[in-house]
Length: 369
Image (cartoon, rainbow, N blue to C red):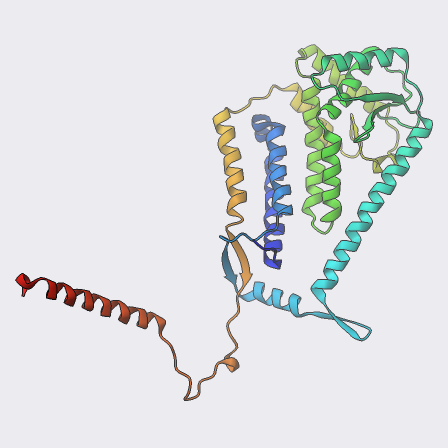
């Protein structure tokens, strides 16, 4: 096993193709309803695996490509940049730019996240007694019971959950009814039960590292929406139709109280009951909640997941490489050079062996003479 520039190119190529294919499937209402959000998250996990594991396995079959592919690779590999008196290969320069930008984005993410979280902590206050009682009710109804605290933050206009390790639910200073508070806390607590903040953190790191690939931003947006849909299904599990309707009406009431987007608050790693950037996402959640799902059978779902895993495995069975013909000027054709016909030599050796075996059998069988 080894890591080469060709195995890296294959990893980028196939992970991008897989992300685009999942995006197309995810936007099909039939697929989302039939296979569910867990299947889509599993497919995205396969994309993560294909993008991060860039090994060229021993059984991989090299496939040589000519024309434009070989010319582009040769031009990139042989290009150099003049820096003062030194000449540096262009691939090394590009790798340096990649690492510098990735490190800058990661540091910027942590700095902005810490800055906004600290700003929110300054204005957080104790929740009302009935809000604390509602959270205790939500915890008692959940199978998983992560340690989550509750605060009221007047700076916010949207409820949100923050913290991968120190988990908090932040409520805006709004006059929610007990029923609305219950649905809001049910939603945010479900995010922590599903470990959605950890998934969002890994996706953000993935986007920071592969910032030059447009497909990762498509993945980031899709996963955020899929996590919200999954959270809706988790929070409303066991609800009646009336309770589902009240849950949706609560989202509408929260949405009406939203002011202009705060660019600072959007920098924090958090979960929110609504997304202010795209109304189509909320409409999709409403449609999925209003209509009952029609899941496919386990055999069909298992066959589809097996097919997805097989596609990832098959992507490791070959490697696209550049192919070049040897330069004509490097081929010596003087009188001292002899051409070796390996195919002809193998054929002659095989015929000699057949003649020898036939002669040996003739000498050992006197009755056949």
